[in-house]
Image (cartoon, rainbow over all chains, first blue to last red; front, side):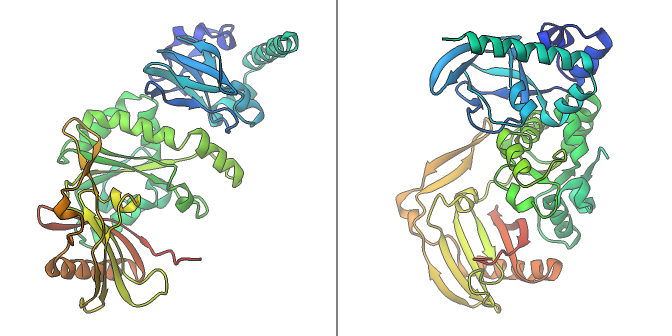
Length: 137
Length: 272
């Protein structure tokens, strides 16, 4: 079946409460995208076009040029820019051969608008991030 | 429509994109093109989505083409925005086998859905989903290539302006060299011949992709084109004007001694 592997999607908090059929629907919207080691996946300040889920490989997150986090298989990023149409909040760079599953703005928006379960989950993720940001020194 | 057609059957801009349709017109007009096929935006999307049926259909259609291949995006024109997308949508040269085409199509699909492409679309008020058709042609290994205007693009004078360099024409298109410049009148008489400084040549690699190499010192300032080749280019300019109308911007290549048309667009006058 084309699209992202269902078992990988099920591990993403955003989609973990969906039933099997719903996960299958979401999975079909994803397209594979490969990045070479060192390639920029998302650039801080630039507009965001897609939400990405890492299938294999690793990536580094930097903010203002400073390393902030490592991303690996099952991690995802890019949903904030897709929601508000704003700029990417961090830079993500492939630190090995990186294979991602990407969901574009054009598919992500109707998906969230048409699925209250995903919409609620997204709100929870956003709320957690807001709290984390408020508690950060 | 999930279609793959020979270039001469690419007629609909909204399905195949304007580059494919332009080449379709050339093929129907009998202009000398490298063999190729046009893919609709829908089948490119299906291949990028990993749909097996679409992948097999494209591979089957591409198999008869001599390899290696050039895989070029042919963005579906949206309110004249095609020219502006030119730099954002991808061209992949030297794709070695029909099976490698799947990965190339995926990359091209993502180039139309990249951060910069989407940001640009939002800025110019294009909120519909991008559709990117693709042209797949046999990649020539040219001795010489370049561009030609069938009218002077700066002052509109009725003369041919030709730029030429060694190897693949990307060195001229991307301004990587100072190309030879030739000016011909409509009868083909050479009005001006200015050798360039062509220090770099781009060639295909046996394992795929391309490489920049240094040009042999004796060839750097040696003119690429002789009178016979200039005459052939002049005839190509006339044929292109017969097919498309006056004022054309042409990409061409000479491979195995034969002259080929790679692309033909309307001239954009400087300052307009």
